[in-house]
Length: 412
Image 1: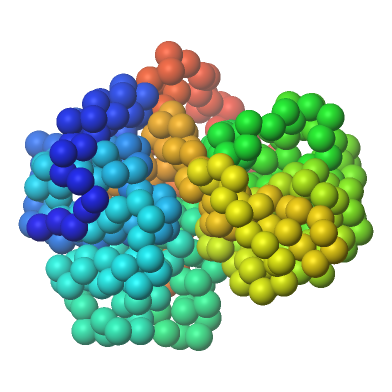
Image 2: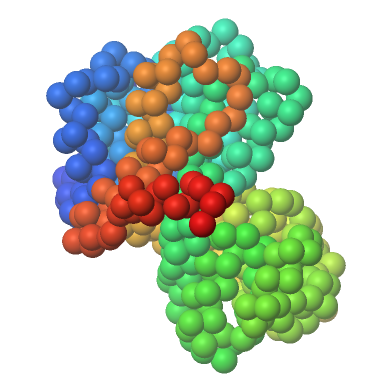
């Protein structure tokens, strides 16, 4: 059962999956390790993830463990149609295509939930939100959440005592946020900006909103390519850290007139408003790398624009009332997936090990976990790190008994 763009793209999608598996050795090793046990045999899993080749490797892994998988896209622009075709050809229940309308996007989420899943794997919290709004009778073992934005949403449910099942905060694993959020988003965001514009980064002034793990990853890559970087923040600790890391820190209303490139990375709304855009220089490039398209006031921009033109595939020119032009990338949606392919396979290897092993953990602990947002167990997190190091040919020291004893003692 599937609803995709073109099943004829399946062969190319399978080649892409082959390439991804070559660069995701930790997940492939985990797949082999647990395949015989079939611990997810007969378990129905609903997923809302970006349909990339890396996600395809995760789907194949869960299926190898016995799961029945249904999947929809986590963003209307993030589906790679050849991957969707490849998964459909392998019997996966997939409902996704690139360029979905918001109505189609919502319908596809409902389609995966209509399969009556027992475990939820989400990216951004849309599956979790839909369940709590319209599917209160689902008998769920539990769920996972991939992103900072999604964690905000499930934590809000828990804080209001509305959470209906246990959730593993995959985003909060060391092997997720230290690598995916920072290195993965840093590289893929720049990839998206460059593919959309083909601009030269050195010498440009870049303004990055947010200095969390995602923001600092973007700042790191922009700085490394020769940009002058300005950071905007609301958190005084992160602002202080950005300043001591050597970057300029100021309010967005002040930074607006300096930037050549803007990147929002906060997970919140109204970060760049029309007030800010009217202060921007002629030719400014504006982009978002947060999960949802609310960080930039695209609706307000459309209202005030005198003219809108599609210049390149993922770039629209808006002529402002003052005659200046700004260029919006990927319609204000997540630029690394809207204009590029998302994170490289090597870093998603870690993130999707977390997702896969969290599904196993939830099933193993079925009926014993409270309706609470849990951090992934340290033992799983460490196992993923050690496995990844091993696949890279890296060996590290281990503490001796005497060293462990020393660290655990208050006496010298």
